[in-house]
Image 1 (spheres, rainbow, N blue to C red):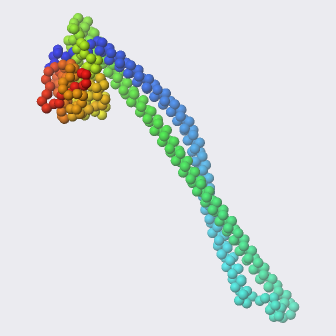
Image 2 (image 1 turned 90 degrees about the horizontal axis):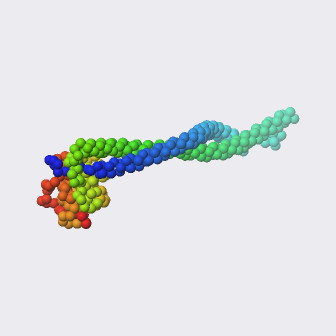
Length: 368
């Protein structure tokens, strides 16, 4: 157990943490306000976009109705074309039969009719018959010509309707895609903004809880000082609380490393903790050392134990010494041992004395 050998943060330390926390809370509140304003703007944009969607939907409905009419006309035109083509075939067949009959001599000509006539009355009847045949042939020819023209005209109209059908179909597909894309973009943006505000609100709640804890500790410290009159002797606190203070004359970097160590001293050991991000619910050995060193800018990203074997400079340092191998890492800071093994022993990563030395590479940060 550490007993009274560890120190708790001074009132000044607690107040500086509270001040920093309040500043961070104000920053988060500003971010939340900004996110809320952006959400309002997006909501206004959503209303505008919904109106635009309504217009596009109306245009789409009109295009679909027009497409349905064109397709109905297309079907009717195809039926009409089939009818005309059948009529043309019948007329052409009749005309062909008449021509064949004429050339094969089945129909008499004018000369043979006059010669074969039995009197004037018979002649008139035979000539009348020839005239009727001529009129019938003329009608067949006219019918054939008209049918052919009608077929050509209907085929042209059908081709135009088919082109219109393709254009309308492409317009309908394009507008449907536009509606779907706009709806997806608006929904995605709104979800992103709401998630951003939710994340900031969650961080603010966590920070406020941390502030309340710091303020409670500061109040308890002040109450103890008032009750005992000797809460601090020479800057060393009586109630440890698992925290340490830098010794007089320690460089600022050492004080920063110690303050960061204090911040996570009693957090649980979590394997891999502190590697995905410096901010975690718990830290393993290398995550703990990385977090504390990063506070003074001595590392830029979380490192695993084996990486500390080649970190910094060889040998022990004046203020900070790191002991590392492939399986474990701990460090000595101004005479204090910072080690997750100590956490398992006494509930805090800080300890005086102890630590493993055999099989460890000794390194230190330059200048410290």
